[in-house]
Image (cartoon, rainbow over all chains, first blue to last red; front, side, top):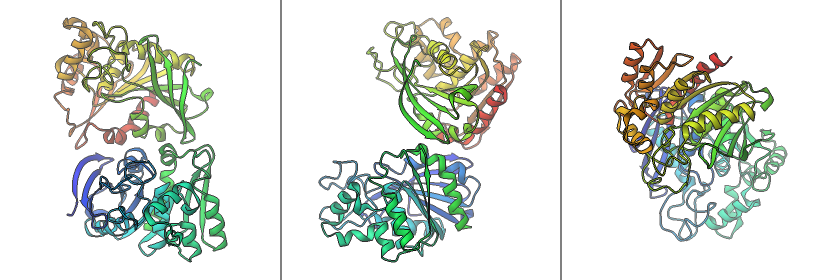
Length: 277
Length: 277
């Protein structure tokens, strides 16, 4: 076993675990949480949840109510932290939308960040490797929220052979077109916007990438970051133009918070389980 | 309306609200959260949830998954903060188990605390008054966790005409017999243990108090505070001796956390709704 269990809580007859392991990709210790609804031997599929800005491995597993939806099934969930922590690079802890808690699921190439901020590799290699080797699951799906929705879409498109389905809550779908995205992509990847395209969902679709499943999105219409940072309609028009199946549920009155996520998490889990079974 | 809405989140088609009001009892501003599953006019009953040590009005409403269980019903829930805050009395912020976040649902009589630490009155007068006047609900039940389980039991017994049913997760049932309780009762009520008895569930039952319903308790057997601080078996023997109906569900492997509460919250909500309807 290549991970260490830090905390363990029985939940809905399964285990909620908080864990730590050494990451090859980030060259740091990284934390993640999991919920394993049955004995590990009985688990045959996994959901990867990617969280948004400022989150750790704890927010989703504490607030979303996913355990209740997964209880009694053969599907586990894993929720990684959103960046390396405490690597000591200048600017790492200065803002909520860059550095710690804001890895944006890219492989950084800029000075200072390129040694550790490899969150794309961390998810696709370390986390996927851990699931396959330590948990012995091969059927995977991926979803996330906001920055994590961006991560799930980018990874689900670029690594489509790995993931049976992909969905997102309130995702950043076109980071090259919004302030959060421009700041992060410039900071992690430098000035050349050509290098940004492989971390932009709309650009990936224009480049011919496809997910295994239709793409499911839930978007609150009272979301304080909608539409400026999220640019949902850009994804809709791109998918329409390139004939990619996309379902966006716009939810009147819902905001960007975990109160929104928890309200619709069951439908996303059911969506993924329909592809995993 | 005698309360101010600070934050509002649509959840499960209802409203999760964070509010503030002026309390007569504590002579301070106090915060609480509510979940109102339908329009206020359609609500006909309310659950009062009392939280445990260190909690605020936020923990339960964020972590317990109660909204999902109450969605679509006519029953709201209100979750008050666990003490007055920032009243400036010496010792108020020195420990996790006394003062801020640890009001113990008593009416303090000791110097320094007696002016503001009136949490018993706050719940039974201000919160109950708010529910009756501002939300127009008259059918009430009460439950809570740990210190809040103690509060729910004490209030449910002493104000039995107000509450149709009472339940608790991992409650402190005999504070006069445990370290948490002795420290709090001495600090808020002074040395004379006679005065402690009206804030001790076991002593109240010995004194003839009865709740309207049977008392429902869930207790994890891997709870880090069981049995020393909780003394569940004291309540069992007292209830048996005084012919009081008590159901304790001991849960193998479950701890003292919100992972335990969320696993069984639905059954407690169903229990209360069976008395409220």
